[in-house]
Length: 591
Image (cartoon, rainbow, N blue to C red; front, top):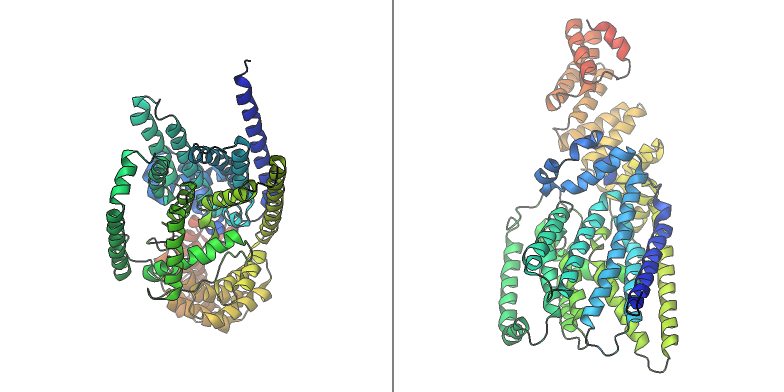
């Protein structure tokens, strides 16, 4: 080994040590969540998902391509877990954690390249400081409590997995940018575009956040361009004209979007809370005074935050954060030391733009949406702290490094402890929704879900208490009336159950389960004609509803004196569900 090889070997050794530290801390901080149960939407999309009963049918190239817009690769990742571990949550949690750690490793190398590229002309560039800043950024990303929802909440895998492709594509572009002058024409015009297209295709099949990657790549190249380059000279010469054009286009687009909710993406889904106009007006506040606040002060984390809806464009809750965003972008663009600040500020807002603009989502804010965008915050925080330490002339270099190391240990220790504690909140439906109920006392969803959690745990009395509490706040919620009706029925409170199921039927008349429940109550109270009508309505809505066919068999065979018709219904019920209760008794009645 010659002398020139030694620095590279030392550098690789340090990088391996940093990567090992990142992986170890990831396992330590998140290890206590691996046995957590499925939560919230994970139950519907995983436990109760019929497609995962035969996961191998999803693991094909045809499925990946044909279901691209429906997050095919994300669903395939769930199918892999289902094939390997069935409905046990451990494998799903381990998958999320593995990719979260991998993303932190990617961010470590990406940050190192960003710093070396932006500070390439600085006289005080120090490899140890750059590597320390890269490690600090990766560790903050790894252990910040705001990341908990993305890692622990299984269905938020879309954020973690799409971030892997996003960061991977950005890292590929960085590698090419460093070698662009020596790269072959084949690499420039075939290799890199092909690799980025593949990454984009795979990432897009997880989550549409990848749509912002081209903008980030162009911004990165522009920020690294020399001041005398053609692109920079063009921008410098026409900056005010371009700014005027962009501002005019933005105002026209905003007006159109606010005036016509069907523009570009079609009308809002009826199940959404507020509609696109109110959603868009509310997002600047969410960006600045919710997401950024939690990044600075990660306390009172909440799966169901209570966010006020902004209804008018002249509201101070809209104008204040818009002015704040404009000031942040302007000040970062004016930063005299480096364009890195402008780049990372733009990273934050660009990455969040799909979920915080025209794409109307059910919830105004969700912690997992900040997962990838937060990389920019961690980098700018680290650079600010590093500058505050290393620009102090009265301290020697060893003292400055000791101060930086101590600060990093304190930050990682504090944030990691908070994350470990937050993981415990996600250990069960009851702990999760009790936490949300306390932090969002005006919202009804936490109360409903807390009632559901107690119902699943067999604590019917507590479940009824929370359902009845929620009913006072929101009497027109279908799930609330239906679930409460089921519990009343279990306790033999027929009249109360009937009342709740009738309300549920009025709210959603095309749900077969409601009609079947009404049929059960009417059959028990000997109102056989009504029971017959509701059971038949249930099988009209769902021709494969085995329970409804079975009850029609009981009704016709034992109560309506139509034994032949009853046998037909029994036979159909057994065909649909051979393992139903009293199947042997029913089979003796059928030929």
